[in-house]
Length: 336
Image 1 (cartoon, one colour):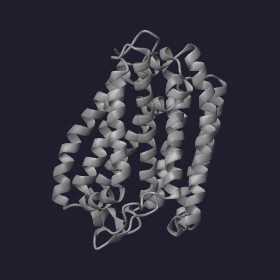
Image 2 (image 1 turned 45 degrees about the horizontal axis):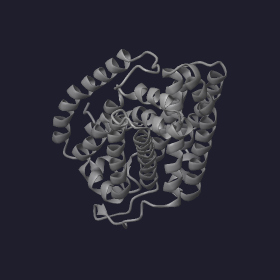
Image 3 (image 1 turned 60 degrees about the vertical axis):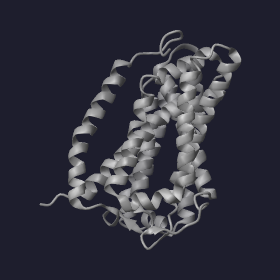
Image 4 (image 1 turned 90 degrees about the horizontal axis):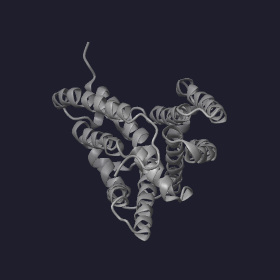
């Protein structure tokens, strides 16, 4: 039986993208929550809670982009011209945010610290919003002619892409609040509980609105979700989202610490699975499949040998770091 290397690489890249969204999502959420938590001591604890892991979280973005370039070059050269502006803005925001992350601990004047706090927060907002815009522009379809991008410079900017941008900012804010519930205590944790409930509701509303909008504007999306066998395959997704939402509300009511974060990640995972069901097997919707975009099987096999070594190492190191810094973060202790 032959091994479908193209399918393996598609799953590997999809997994890397989800790991980036899940891991970098909560530390972007920390910056998104800065305006709601203005006290310096709280912000220090918030930043310290992600300081050991935030750099490593972005590793998966590199793997996703590098893997796309290596394994699916046609998709890479088609998607990037369509999304240059939001992706460049996202990368600049991540760089600016990283500088602010370091500088807020180096500047001693209150005015300087406030300036870098704002830079950190706005970098988080811009990065999250641009990721959402890129997602929306990608999902709504990319115009392709002759194996090349045929759209305009501003095709990425649509009401739907703006909607997905706002939705992702809200969702990352939810992940950040749930992370703080897990990693902090006392008054900061109580305020994180208070923020998690409205953010959870807003995230569910955003998912519903984005899904309904896609049904309204996209014929392939309607055919996939309202016809057979797509309906049978996708039906468990909204049901499971509803169950997780109920469990999330119960966890907040009982003041559980880890479960809200796990439920929020579960909602993101189910939304990601729903997106995969909607798009399969297209890597550049609505025209190019993963097999049409794939490089030669020998190149895929060669690249897979390297991935088989590096990915487990990255996973093991990431797991070790999270385990090593598994405890609560308190004021006066942490990153300096």
